[in-house]
Structure formats: structure tokens, C-alpha cells
Length: 194
Image (cartoon, rainbow, N blue to C red; front, side):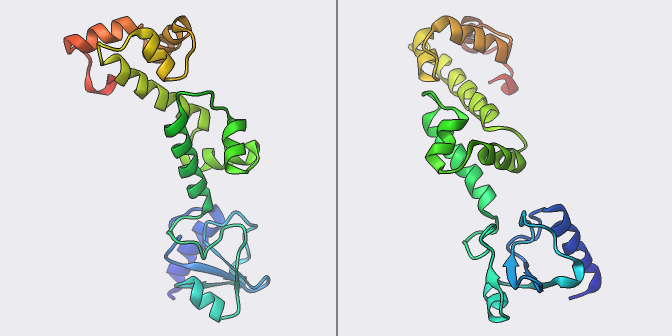
């Protein structure tokens, strides 16, 4: 491998970036462990790293897979992205119910702290923000249907009280549910507001 390419890969290892995940695997000479370049373990010294094109090649060279980043699992991205995807799926399926960080963590058998930290690192925002985004889009979809009452729309996205739903919707959009519905029915909403 060219020294320039090795230096670029090492920079991503030091920053825990996933740029080269699935492309290279990092064999650490001092521990005899092979990791993804984005592994959250302590960054090894540059001279203690060997790069391999596959986990199998690293194992043949005498390394064992890391238990933290699980480089042997399929896919170019590590378990952090898989956890974030599981959170997104749980939110998409259960946004109409009482979802909390604690209930999400319990369903995934991880600590709430680990879930919050990992999800935010991967997505740039918290699970609570994602839940609000999903609920808001679902509320807009509900309100676009004139046969759905305001109370039904609020209940569908997890609000027991129509007044609480109305206050939340106004905070999120700047419009009351009724104003949103009237503007939507009249075709006055811009694409980015829908």
C-alpha cells in the first residue's frame, strides 16, 4: 500500500470515521485484534497497524475479530449504524404510542445512555428529535385527509388530548391543525412545509 493512502486511512482511524469501513480492516499488532477503521476502541499507534482487504485475510494472518465493532458482521457499516437503524424502525412502527428513550433502550437491550450517545453520533440528532420528526410528518399526513378529525389525528401520533396536540403542532409548524388543514386543502402550502 502506498504511504499516502495509508496515511489517509490512518487519519480516518484516528477520527473514528467510517469512510473506509468495508474497504479495509485494521489489524492491531499489539492486541492481535482486527477492527473496522471506525472502531471506537482506543486508537492504536500508526506503527502497530496493518491494513487488510478483508476480515478473512486478517484472521488468516493471526488476528481475531473485535467484539466491539464486529468487523465480521455483514455490511460496510458497524453495529452503531445498525443500532441507529433499529431505533428508526422502532420509532416508525411505534410513534403513535408512548415511546421514551428508556423504552427504546429496553427493547434493544442496551442502556439508555449508550443508545442516546450512539444514535446521536451516527445521525447527528437524538432519538427524541427523530420521534418528533416522524410524528410531525404523520400528523401532516393525517391532517391532509379531511375525513380525519383533529382528535383522531392527534391520537394517531400519540397525543391523548386534542388541545395538547394542537399546542404541539403549532409549536412545530407555526400553524394550528385547522390552519394547516385549510391551507393544505386550498393548495397554499409550499412543498417544504408539507
